Image 1: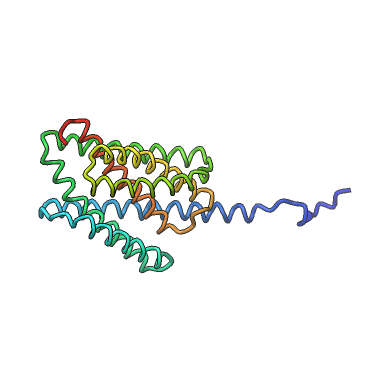
Image 2 (image 1 turned 135 degrees about the horizontal axis):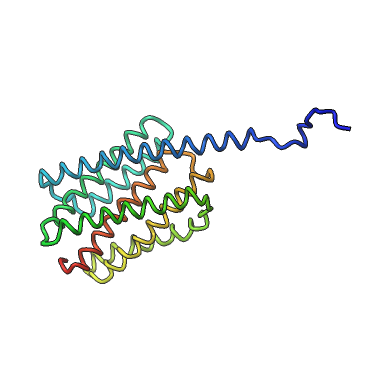
Length: 228
C-alpha cells in the first residue's frame, strides 16, 4: 500500500542536476559575453596598430608576451585580476595582428583575402559551436590528440621560420585550421559537460582558437591567391 510519502533513498533527486545545469548555463553566458568583449577590444587594438603603422614586435617578444600574459591569466583566473590579464593578453594579440593585416592589405588582392579569412573564421566558429551546443555530444576524447597536435604544430612552425621552409609553413597553417576547429568543438563541449567551470580560461581558449584559425586562413588564402 502506498503511503503517499516519497522515500528519499529511492526517489531520484533532480536538485543536483538542476544545479549543474544552472552552473553550466552561467559559465556559457559569462564565456560568450567575455569572448565578445575581448574580440571587440582586440579588434580595436589591431585597428589602432594598423592606423599607426606599428612594427611587429618580432617572434621572440611575441612568444614572451603571449606566454607571459597567459601564465598571469592562468594564475589569477579566479580573481578580478584575471579579467585584466585576459584583456592584456587579447589586446597584445590584437597589437601583433595589426602589422600582419597591414602586410596583407598591401597586396593586390589583400582586402578580399582578409575579408574571406574573417568570414571563414566566423562561419567555422559559429557552425562548430552551434553543433556542439545543439548536439551536446561529448568531444573530450579529442583532448589528448589536440594537445599533441598543437605541440607538434608549434614546433614545426618554429622550424619553418628558422629553416625558411615556406612549404612546411603552409602545412603548419593547414594543420592549425584543423586543430583550432577541433579545439572549438572540444572547449564548447567541455563547458557543456562541466569539464570547464572557469569562464576566464574558457574565454582564453576560444579566443586563441579563433585568432590562430584566422591567421592560418590568412596564410593559406594568401598563398592560394598567388599574392605570397
